Image: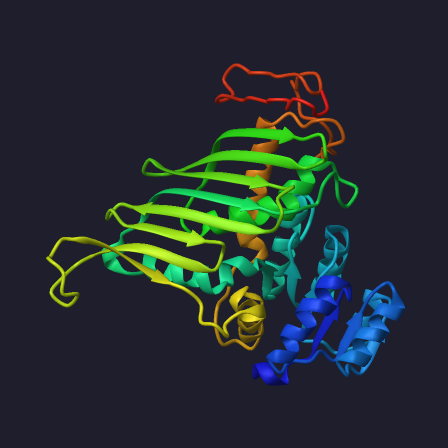
Length: 370
């Protein structure tokens, strides 16, 4: 089966589904055969704009009526869980935007269903498919660059402020933004575990999460995820065991160290810096990774290539979420999504240090909820 002959459906005709994913599919020449949204007018509007034959307001009705090879999901996590389950029932390969679910238990259950059915699953982490991150991974494939021993990454965004999807502030931050940051870190290390976490909830509803992660071989990563910034920005700095320094700046450009040789015209051994920046006309869906990830998903469904991250891959990130919740005593309003508050938590909002809990610290912020 070729990617061009696939019958693809899309569920979720909101801002991201209709404003990003449908235009990206159209740019790849892969217009869906059907779209669905619980708001039927949104589905009809998207179908009319992109000349899609069928529009539905019921996901189950779309699966029953359309002979789909693949489906793209873009909505809240509760919708994703329901639609992923239906896709597994109907043996439909699935691309699901992040977050695919709310809890680790849900992700493990869905991953098992797709694995047992032999279906392709892909979670939408566009930043790992962006031009800058692809360039970073290409550098790390070079023998002279070695492997990453230390990494710092900052991920800031303007919102959301407060909770989201009926969840509290910490869980909203994890599922909206930390999910991206931890996915990117996971592309540079194996077997990550949490060693330290601090969560700040600010008076305006924004939040800051600071993490220290470790990996075998005394390797480490430091991550800051924050909301309340003027705009989205992603910056990273990586150091390798070959002494190379790589910087990702504003999720778009790369700076990296190299050593001079006879071909450079500089004295041998001199440390140099090179830079990659996107061309003037590069940008949009391709530079941000949306086109590359959807193309990869459709190629995988057609049997052309393997892809990631799958639902199985996403388990790593959700396990880290649980570790973070074990470290951080959430401030008021956080919903504990894995069966209620964990045992031995201190009273809400009070600083604590639990014996044997690896520097477990909570620091209420001046002016914020106490």
